[in-house]
Image (tube, one colour):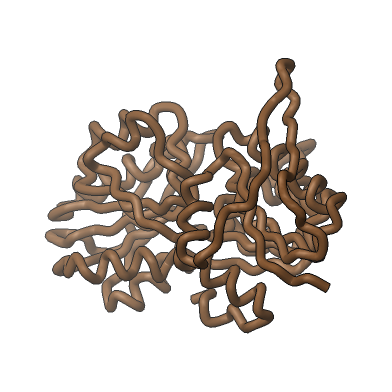
Length: 313
């Protein structure tokens, strides 16, 4: 059985896929991913994949539904082309915020999307910084869950920021912030936040000392930037010397860019799990780091049946 490594990509983040291929010394697989005139997605695999070990790189980012459907149809096309194994590489897993029934008569969309990916024909999933760790259990196939923490840590360490305090913008992110603070040998603070509705947040109080400190707000994603900007202002109001922010997924929807531009944030560090587009590329406060080497190394180890556990930290 041919176990040749092949990497394919949809239209969500082709730049990241090319970076991963460069890291691995591979060429990106040939496939046509386009649309019919009515908007239906059309996929054609333009090379032989029979018996190959396939990795499909596709973040389910904006346009979210098109990106998700592209992923499903690409996987189906590869399965029907007799690929030996198909791994869905999903740097950003959309619908991850809808991971439980916190109100009556609402869906668990993360579970539905996990089922769709498995049903389409994915044999395993490689993803990064899920919004909630339990989403791994929604899949009926093996999941390798990586963290962008090493990439962010390397950048922040080189900055040599004095009197650093890592701040979690809400109670849900405390574990992430604590791990980050421990590795930087920094103090930890927590923002008590009460959410009034989807994409709306109200900062209530800061638990911890930020007076005269450099603050690093840490989150898994920045969507409309309301939480991060309000958190940054709350820290500044409490006497923080400067406020930074770091996240893995730069969703940046709606008024996010304007909020960041007009905020007290010195810099917002993000990764390229989601590509920056248009005005985002020109925003001087946004600094993007690449997770391609991390994903590329994980792909190599999975392909060669090596352990990837050392990459999880």
